[in-house]
Image (cartoon, rainbow, N blue to C red; front, side):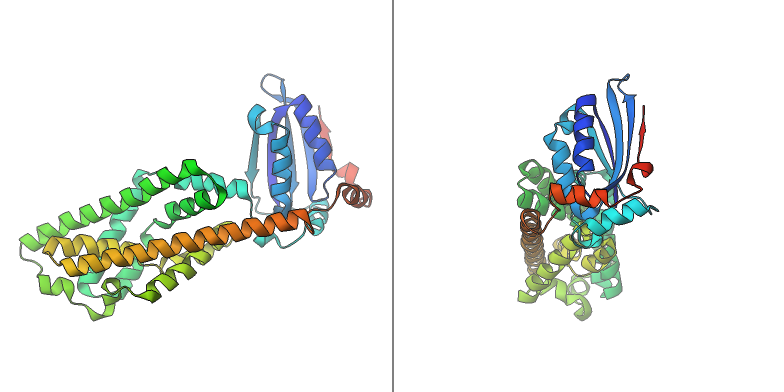
Length: 334
């Protein structure tokens, strides 16, 4: 279940309550009259099954609440309520598979912006990856993959392309490519200093059989990126974020950027070009697979919304009538 908090003018709040009452996938409605804006707006709170959250949010937006007030979604750790259990049972599908588009798009807006923390983590990841390549230590490459935050703007680009949010494309591209440029530049600067002091040799930089997959891109690089793109988007949209770690250690974006900075510093241009190709293949696979996955999820949701999705209004009222204790569990405060 998701918890929804709405602040809206009285007429919009009343219309929202009527719409919510007609939907069996909502529960535990509470209204506080005149709670906001010096008594000119009401506070409405209720819970909704995650699988049907998009329909309810669309209804609230159709009432103009997004313009005249606000809609806030939160995910409670637990809801102990018989009415909430009934609402969840009335929803079609599994809660973990429910995609809340408003939540996804809001996250994409945040991920599309560059921040100091994003740049610092990306620079650190590139440095770790370059050291891992020089020492030929796969464990360091894996560590760099986990530290790297680059999947966030990639996912934001996928959302922008799949959902038609053109305003997110340029910020996402700027964050991704700008971060890679800074990471490569700092890595180059470090290694050119180390190379000038004679602490490393060009032969040592280009040698390393255990990590040479970074400088040997092939069709499998693209295939793995496609699979990782699907897994990454699914983990973000279906409340399975634990699988993101597996996505991070499947793609070779950060190791490629770190290797570019290091190999350019010592003049190993063949390896730098191969790393650039590796980077391009991984980014292309992630974008194609991620966007396609979002498009498919959106299509499935529209099909279920049109048929076999949320119950009809008449069915909703019938299911409501079966809840003998429903009215006693609701509260309306004035």
